[in-house]
Amino acid sequence: MKKNRFILKAYLLILLIIAISALLLWGIYFFSLDDRVFLLKVLLFSCILFMFFPFFKVNIKWVLNYFFCIDNSWWDKRIQRPRILIYIVYFGVLYLVVTNFPSNKNDYVLILNRLSLIFYLLIGSFVVGRLIWSKKFETLILPELKNIVSHDIKIMTSDSKVLDSLINDNKSNIDKSSIEDFKKLLKGEKLDSRIKWVGTSGKNSITYTGIFLVLHSVIEGGEIKFSREKRKALMNFITDNFVKFEEEEIKEISFNTINGAYTNFILPNNTLKR
Image (cartoon, rainbow, N blue to C red; front, side):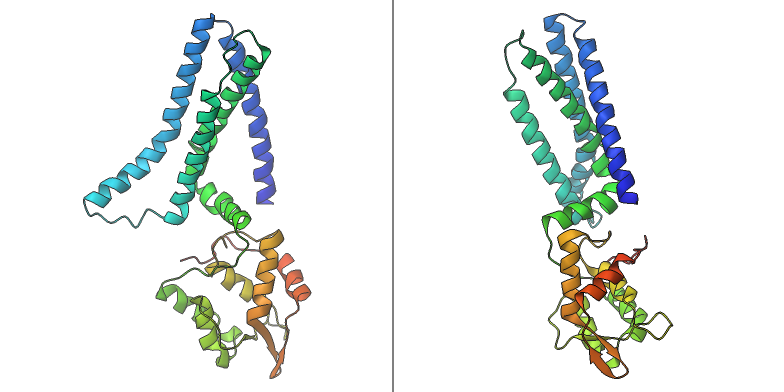
C-alpha cells in the first residue's frame, strides 16, 4: 500500500515538473535570444549547486574526519555508495545533454531540447538534490533498487548482541538440536543440516512468521517485503535451509506453502537490523 502511494506521488510529481518546465521555458522566450541563453545558464548552474550541496556537506565531513583521525562510522557505505553512483550517472547524462545541445536557434528541435533540459534539471534537483538524501530513500527506494540489481539472498554480518537477541527470541521456535545450525545461518555460514522449525501461532500448527521476521532482519535489503524473483529466491532459501519438525517427525516445507504464508505476512516497521 505504501509502495503504491509512493508510485502515485512519483507520477504526479513528474506531471507537475513537466508543467513547471513548460512555464519556465515559456517565460524565458519573452526575453531576447542572448538573454535566453544567459537565463538557461543561470538555471543550469543554480540547479547544479543545489544538487551538490548535500553531497559536499556529507563527503567533505568524511574527508576531514579521515585526515584528522575522527570516527567515520556514521558514513554507511551501503547507503553512501549508491548515492555516489546516482550522482555519477546523473551528471554523466547531463554532460552529454549539454555538450550535444543543437546550435540551430530557429529549429523547433531547439525548443524541445530546451524543455527537456529544464525538465532534467528540475527532476534532478528533486531526486538528486533532495530525495536520495531522505529517510524514504534509505528505507523504501534503496532496498527496492538493491532487490532489482541482485536476486541473491545475502546474509549480513551482524554484531554479537544482535545475534544473541535473535537466538534468544527464537529458541522456542527451533528444536534444540538445530540451535548451532541456526547460529551458523545468522553468520552466513554453511549448515551441517537443515534447521528444524517448530514455531507455532499457539494453535498447535506450525507457522512461518518467525522465519520471515528473522530472515528480513539479517538479509541485505530486508527492510521491505520481497517481490518477483527476489521473493522466489527467498522461498527457495527457506526450503533449502529449514524443515518442519512436528510430533518428532521431520517434514519438508513446500514452496507453495511457504509462498502462500508470505503473501499474508506483514513486515513490521521495526524489523531488527544490524
